[in-house]
Structures are given as C-alpha cells and as structure tokens.
Image 1: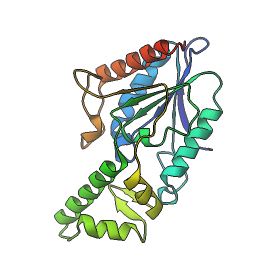
Image 2: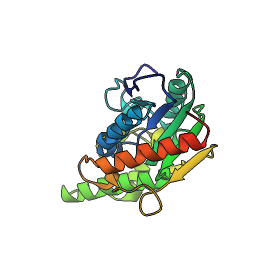
Image 3: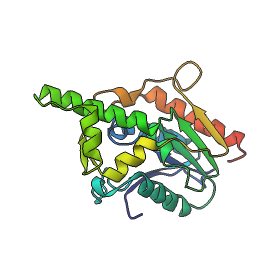
Length: 222
C-alpha cells in the first residue's frame, strides 16, 4: 500500500503477527499512545505487532478526501497479504468496519462501532462547533452537503463516497472472532476515544495485550 508502518518485533521468531487496526478519524489519535503501549507488551510476549498508516491518515501522502472505506479495506488486505506466518487482526472501534477483507488467521475486536453511529458523532461535533462560531447548520443540511462535495468533519475532509459508505457500514462476520467490550466483563480501561485530547492508559494497554495473547493461544496460534 506504500504507507508507513509502525512495527515492534520480539527477541526471537514471532509466535504470530498482531495487525492493529486503529479506530477511524480523530478516535485514532486519541487511542494511538495506548495502542503503541499494547504493541510493546505484545512484543515482550513473543509477538510481532504492526500498526499501518491507512491512506489519508497520519504520515500518508494521500489526501483523505480521495479515500473511502473500500480503499481502506483493500489497503489492509494488501498489508496482511505481505505478512509471513499467522496473523491476528486486532481492530478497535471503527477499525472493525474495514478488517474483513484481510486474510487473517483470527480476529479480535474491541468495542466495535457501527459506521452510522460514528458519522452521527462527527456531524454533531460539526454542528456544535458551527453553533459556537455563530453559524447555523444542522444534521440534515450536512447530510445534504455530504452528497455533493467533500465535507469537513472534526478536521477530516470526507468524500461523498466515504460518508455514504460510512453511513451504511457495519462490522462484517469473520471467524474465528473474539469481540470484547470495556468494563467488568471486558477490557478494564476507559473509553479513550471519547476524550477531547489524546490519552494514555498503561493498565488498559497491558489488558489489551494479555487478552489478545490469550485469544491467540486459544486459537492454537503460538
């Protein structure tokens, strides 16, 4: 896919490669530091951990307005195809919307989110920001605008194809899959994606790494 990749390798031959699929848009920035800590913990436990930049994100030279969900799905499939050995695809939030075309050995999803919910959150943030700036916009007007031209939402310029696909996107069935949430019956931690600024939760990172490792072993990997 020609994009940058952050990778941590274990001391010896990796048990498997954990491909991290981060949340989408601004949620990726809010969770990145914690995900990097989880990747370091996975490397200590004998796994290779890989976090690719999606086209239009982070260090990518591709304008986000030229990208849609289908392109992200294809990009992840391309990354996975280049990895030797078993691959566990670990997706967070909206990352679960783009992980199903990749050829994984197993999947792990944390708090998967539907595309329509993510899009509404982005649009509500735009309406709120516009109101503070003295501008009158609404969800309905933004939806109409999004059909004709790229729409700026929370610093992200989304193409009509992106908003259309996102509004209809749901996480697709994959197998074997472990889907887990936050809280008493899931990963102990805070919903970093709801914070106004990027945060870091070291305990949550360790819990993520431990759960992925346990899932890997239960699938007979590593």
